[in-house]
Length: 266
Image 1 (spheres, rainbow, N blue to C red):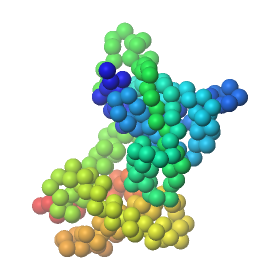
Image 2: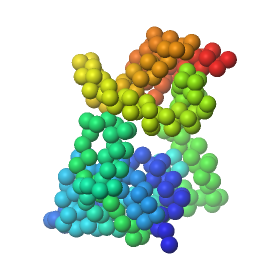
Image 3: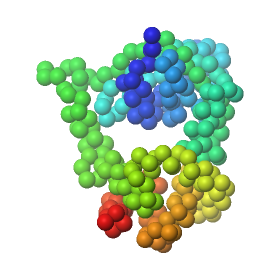
């Protein structure tokens, strides 16, 4: 019987950051955030060791581990308890390294991967679900927390992302937003990886963090691919050079993206 169900998979995918608890050889507790936490199969989770030497040392001494994954908007999640196996080759390591390099760039090391054999799962619920006389609906609680976190209304993260995907879909002549996401994981990312070294040198010359390099490399590929469309590379350059772009388009850039999309799709 599967230990990890569909809802657990959804929470792990949406939480953004899991927390792994291990015990040091001296018996002290150790808590470490894991941004690469993901589901391997119905019985296992895994994460990449990018900069977690203490977690690796702890697991080699004592493989016991508990990982918490909580969706901060839905205010619920799960505790996954089991044992962690440190691996430095094989399919789990290869997958962890592939995802890390595709999403963050090859400058990040995947020193090891940790495969967690999940033996017990327990739910984590906000007190808001338990102590109100009238039960709180998840959607209502999520709406409250989107507002608290600045994700609600016209400036919401989801709306900005949707606008950005729409303009890319139209500019690059894709049939749908889903096709944009699919192609980004293949052709565009592959082409961008070939130009990553140049992009890394450029962001360092500008005094920007290394994290900008993969985004810049992808943008360069998109700019080249847009040359045959009505939207010029110069227009796209102006969008991509907005200082807010590397996190998420600002309100100003969102309106410009939508305007470009409407002209292109019209």
